[in-house]
Image (cartoon, rainbow, N blue to C red):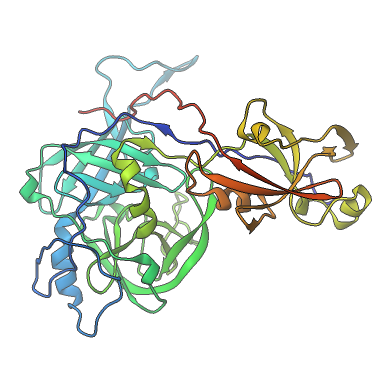
Length: 410
């Protein structure tokens, strides 16, 4: 065997729910029309295909129409301190200090703002600043999708007339070579505009807290720390993605990645599909199977042959009692083999496909279950001894975890 076989926990916990947001009836997401050719145009109606027509607004016109819908988000955390015996407990009067800043954009006149989950993670308070405004407004988290790196906020105290929703495009219609404009606040510099092209579509990158590979829009528009959560626009000024990551082989003295011409955005259609659940206050997580599995590619070819194992798939090691995997009848290994560099349980099922998609790694299984909701039937293809089985099992919902708001009004 080469290296130490990694026992990989498939932590795909089904959605728990947060309390519903305080949106008034009818204050749903507004899908605005494309940016008008005249500067500062606004509109309503359904999003278009996302593909620019023959005549498009200039970049200046696009920026003027979109700039008032982009916001700077500042995350606060309690001032840390401690004693000889470790960190002290929070006390009344403790000062909250800015921990980081990011970007976001307005999606409706009810004050909802879309951003990255990592921009607001572990915040004790959030402030939102609009372009050209000295005043900062408090905001609270409505719903989050940590595995997708998306979060929905609601800002308070801003007159509805001052909220400028950005139009949403269609990321499925994107093609490499189209114009891409990134708006945001890199390094806290509000309303910074960079432009490039869509370099690739469907680029698989590790995303969210569990780093599950997901398709992203790749762009060479300059994206830097602080751009996270800001919009990526097409030539019509429609949002085609939520800026989230950069590939950065170069880092500064503090270890912060710098722009290298390779940035990534979460496709806006992914965010659009999750918006109803975010508006309902959900904490959206990946589905949960509840098992430990070994990626067979971690084993040397000679070891697989000696053990009679296939070249690809996930060898189930243990199954959590009462878990969806147990309810589906999956079996863990009963024979333990010890080796100088690890221990393997043999005799368990080998998962080779999920939902009709081949599974060669834990990431493949996570990707196959990505976006599935409780009650959805996801067939699993297994190798059990010399037999191939299909388990068409409906994944039940896991009990919702206790919810304690992490973001409080100032």
